[in-house]
Structures are given as structure tokens and as C-alpha cells.
Image 1: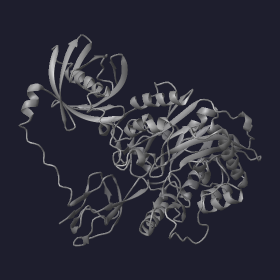
Image 2 (image 1 turned 90 degrees about the vertical axis):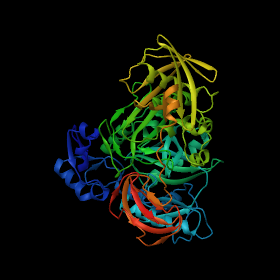
Image 3 (image 1 turned 135 degrees about the horizontal axis):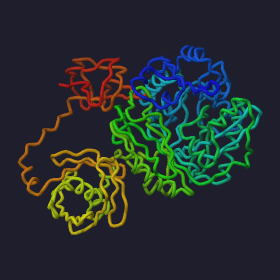
Image 4 (image 1 turned 180 degrees about the vertical axis):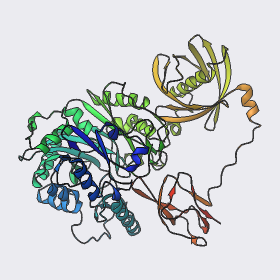
Length: 616
């Protein structure tokens, strides 16, 4: 993408309809095809044509191979480490600890659980855990389809699944002069669907001896394949600090900024220097661990659905929390950008840094509270709750953290009764904010109100004394002070001396208000005492009976339909498969019955909530 001092961006034809930062920053932009990866970024003919057209001298395309100077490792290393089957054999030969697996014909019977993964994959795509024969057959089908769609290679690797491990990776940096360094570790155990959600550097778990052993094995593997660039060697680590090679990513990882924070190295600059042929400027003894860094992956997805099903739409308002100190935001979108079904749902990487872990986490709390994202559903509620959860704060994490902590799925702070318990201090913060927003326009000094939150109704008394409001709920009084600016998406409020940032997302004349507090969105209704009494006589909207219908839980493309009208289906039987952001999802019947009507077919695009099937 480099041509002298000019930057050239490769992009898709959809980008002209949706402004993207990298295209706006570039001196020149070249369209390489439509949104599907097989027709654009995986289409080497289109990439080569763009290179010839622009006379580019150096190209950075993750794990793609070009005949110009490639900012990344050479062809041999990419092919060897990009293939999980070959990389596992090479790791064994380099005396790197490996997961017990299968090097030839796969025989999984009596060996469960097993991990099925795409040989050419990454980023959680094409990965499934199987606990029995049926899950193995289903996992093989979906993993091979996802692998073919995402990487153009449907080969799979099956190996023993290590239950409840940590996922810890080592950043390596090597040049073309046989020099290689390990730049410490990153803890990446907080995951959903085998994709990382929260990362930090360093890890709370590693001692210096284990860190050194992992680093030395990572460097040994890099040297075994004559690696030259920045790369990542990923390991699974058990409770006894035994570690096993997982894979090597021959590219710059999403989470590389936290390594830059604690080492002071600019990895992109180092990659360009290596590509030019310069030797590394540092020795292993020069690599420090200074402070602590945390990264949260901000996704356009609904965390209340399987910890995150995709959400699409246009960013109607977007404001990054760059005014918070020690915050870095890496993103490729801006206000007005569209989030589509074709690629990863990541909005940005939110990074915070501190002198120690406590400071870095405190900065992350503040940054998440001040991050404004409107137009799509996002996962800030989940991120905000994870980083303050006692287990996470204590460093007690594993790749099963989310299902262990939320066995019934993520419900948000509301599920923990933060707001319903009158003795919980946080309960009143939102009430105070909402009352002031709703009532500031009234020329009164005292109000008696009824607030509806979830299934509960609360009587609240509010009195006004200049810029200070006194709020009483069930005998507890709090004083609220703030300078309101309703044009701002961020509202700063001080409650008995404690400052909080809250976002008012929407409000209407009927008293309905939606706010975001500590990451979680709450929907309340604030009425006067009289209006609340009269509202009891208003008819309620009937709840839809969903037992005989199936609606799409996410936007996406219908890959396959397994039934037709008149078919008898059983509870749990697959109805269709929907692909969203490179992940395939099986839609199943909620009950046994006969198919009355189909409302989708293979190749169609569906939106969240669209009707897929009706049962008699």
C-alpha cells in the first residue's frame, strides 16, 4: 500500500456509499471488487491488477502473497504457519509444546471433546467444539463451509480440546538477518465463539520463568521457518502453567497496540523497516514491561444474544472517548459509516494504559462510559461488566469465563438487580438523572412521580433548590448537582460528591426514556402520580405468540434451507442456515409441527426479526 510517500488504499465498491477512514486518508483509492471476500480481497487477480495500476512498491495485505515488496513475512513462512496442520508438525520439530492431536487420518471416537478448526483459518472462523459424534458431523459441515467462505480453503484440523485453559500469546519480531525477539505476552482469555473480546498485557498469570520459556519457544518456531516480520505465537496454558502451541498468526494482530503500550515499540514501523531489509534495532534485554494495557473490542452486536449476534446499520452518531487520558482508539469508521453483514462486526479497538493494572482498568471504565455509538447495537454493556467483575479484577479468567459467569447468557446489570435493590447506591443514579432530564422544563420545586423500570414501579419525591436536586426513594435521600447540556450525548452528574457519566439515548412526550449507565441500556417510564394512576386503564399490546414461527435473530444471508412446506419437523431440527459476518448459524425449530409456509430461500438477505418460517 506504499508508493514512495503516497498511501494507496484497496477497498470494496460498497465503500463509496459508506465513508471509511482509510479511504479518506489515502492519496489514492482502488476498488478491488464487491463485498464477498472471494470476489475482492481473496481475488489475487484483482489485487495484482491494482498493484500494477498504481505501480505500488510495497504491499501490506494480511497473509496474501504478492510479487512486490511485501510488508510481512516471506512466502514460505506464510504458507507454513498459515496451514495449521503443517504448522503443528513444524512446531513439534522445533521442540515447541503442542496439543495432543492427529497428524494423519482422524479417528475421533472415544476421544471427546475435540476441537474442529479450519487449517487455514483464524479469528475464530471455522472453529467448533464437539462432545459427541453428532456434534462432530455438524461441526465438520459448518466449519468447512465457513473456512471455504472466509479463507478459500475448506480443509480442517481436529485435535484434543483442552477444557478451561487460558489463551496467552507471545508477540515476536524477526528480521532477515537471523535476529528474533519475543516482546512479552498478551492475555486473550475473554472470548466468545472462539473470538477474543478483552485482552491485556502483561498477563496476571505468568511468572518470569514461564514467560521466558514461552518466549524462547516462540522465537525458536519463528527461526525454524525463517520468519521475518511481526507475528504472534498463540498458546493454551493450563492451571499448572503447562503451555501448548495453538497456532502462529503471520501478521499484525488486532491486539498489537497493548504490546506497543508496555514495550514502547511501534510494531508497524518495525515491520516496514524489516521489509526494507534493515536489521532489528533492539536486543532481547532491551524489551521492557512498563505499566499495563487493556484492549476491549467494541463490536456491532447484541451481547444479550449468545454473547453477541451481529447488528447492522448506519452510525447515526459516533464519538470516540479521546478526551479521556491514556486512551487510544483504532477504528476504520466514522459517523455516517455503514456496518454491513459481510465482514467482522468490530467497530473499534479501545485501548487504555496505566502505570499498573488498576489504573488501566479504571481508565477503561471511564472510556467505555464516554463512548458514544448510536445507530447500531453494540457490546459496551458486556465489556463494561466484564472489566469490573470480581473474577476478572482478581485475574481469575479462562476461555470459559463468559459461559461460567453468565451460564444463562448475559443479562446486563438489570439481571443483577443493581437497580431493583433500594439499598444499592447505583439504583438512584439513573433515577436522579432521568428525573432532571424530564422535569427541568417544569417551573415547580417539588414533584411526586412514579417510575416504571422492568416489572417494578417506584414512588419518588423530587425537590429543586437551584442547580441541586434532592431525590427521595423509600426513605433514602441523595443530592444531585449538574450543569446540563441536552445537546451533548454525554451527561455528567455528581451524586453526593461522586461524578458519573450517563447517556440519554432517547425520550418522548409519553415519559419513556432510554439511558445508558455503566454500559447497560435501561428503558424507564417517568409519570406524574396522576398520569401513573390513569395509565392503568390503557390497553396493553398483545405479546406475539412465537411458538409457531421462527424469526431471524440477526441480519445475514440465507445459505441453505433444509425444509419445505408440508414437511414434519421436530423440536431442535435445523430449518435453515444464516451467515452473518463470516459466521454460519443454524436456525432450529422451537417445537414439533408441520411447516405451513416458508418466507426465505437460499441466497436471500434477511434482517433481524424477519419471519423465516411458520408452523401449523
